[in-house]
Image (tube, protein in one colour):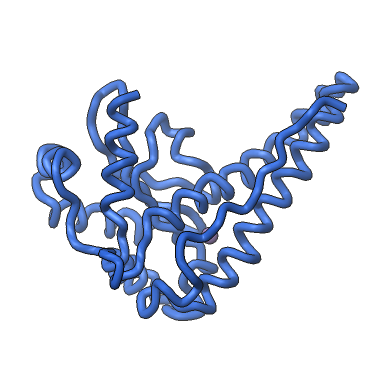
Length: 206
Ligand code: MN3
């Protein structure tokens, strides 16, 4: 069998309780050690089966595995971004973006407040499980707010992900119960704008 890369759960850049009071330690621990780890494990299993099917020229089986690869691969990509665009309040979480990203948000949404309002409204309105994103459109050289269902990665909409909010119930229910709006409102206190600005510069440059 051909050599195959196995995906790993990335290290969490802070401990489980570090994002309190916005996200509880209990949610963080389950979210990271159960949910994200599950996507990684299932992605590796699906890819292993895929490579096996490929080696047998079993196209039907290759097609059958695509939804598992999309779902678990998307879950791995999305959560790997999510952990790094958040940071504890004590380490500088929250506030507003600076520099070129701040200017582009003003250009494309009118103001930071207006961006925040639109982003919060669209993300809060996602039906069922999904993600709300701020993405960069390289072709049009502009920012866009987008929502994705399930674990579809933002690249499926032709955008580079800069900032995302996981609105699956596993991300907030133990703490915020059914009130997704409170979670989506509170999470602005822990956005790691420095990381988001770095993603933006990388997206513009490449
Ligand atoms: Mn999640």
